[in-house]
Length: 399
Image (spheres, rainbow, N blue to C red):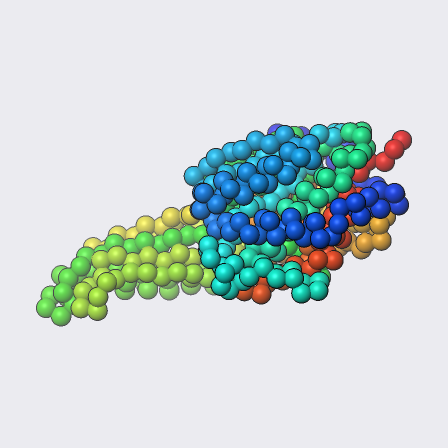
């Protein structure tokens, strides 16, 4: 189980110097080839819940990982195709976590966010979040193929298809996929200055659904029960709950979508809202979600449903996480890189692993910006820096 992976980390994982000859090997695969691989992935538009697109990119990615010695397992879920890839090496595997879905709908490439390269800046939907991160893994493993198995660490890569919607299908499987791993590294984007992410807010997506009773808004409004009015009152309750100063920690609350009603002359029979919540600590998370579950209708005749669509626990950095960060930093120092880390506001799949006690860091993707925005981009130079750093992390020194 995960606890076995957490114990004895100091004796089971070593990060070491990359020699001059090892670094020179990176030149064998040109920068243009590596960027071309990112482009290949970006040109397959993969919005969450698009199972056909998920299967298509999974097949392409599986082919590339097979070519670098990976044993690929395809896992079909209701959201798409996940990949679990084991690459042989020495010791317990280091878990590398990523996702193939993006927030962008099909057609974004032809409209808002075309693929472009402008000097060091590379743009495209999902390029930064997080297809360039997948290429960091892939290119590093390709470089490591020159080394014998006793010189490189065993790796398990897990790429899920529903991370951008909270991993409702793949999240429950992550613990099993992490079984036996010594530690986990997530390839989401780093902090703007390149610092890794150690600790992340918990997140939850909650849907409030109200059923009222339709009636003519002028002739017999007293026979109706307005679902829209009920929803508005419930959202005010939610606001009071999440802003309660008695809570142990702060809560970020965003009402992301609202829908309901049909006509202005009809008392609305249906209404719903989806709410995004962020938590710093587990106690606040439990209290708020418990209070939401206990909400009851304000109006006679109204029915209220509170559904948690997805939830990731708050991940508060542990001593084991700090130790893992320190080892990565020491590996970076051997190749002239300064590596730092600190908590992040956004949540991801590493919340699930760090929250379970597996030594974890995130943000190993290249620097850039504009995640989920039309100016999404990554820095070409940072892509190569991350490849070099991961190679240092995964290389085992000769005795």
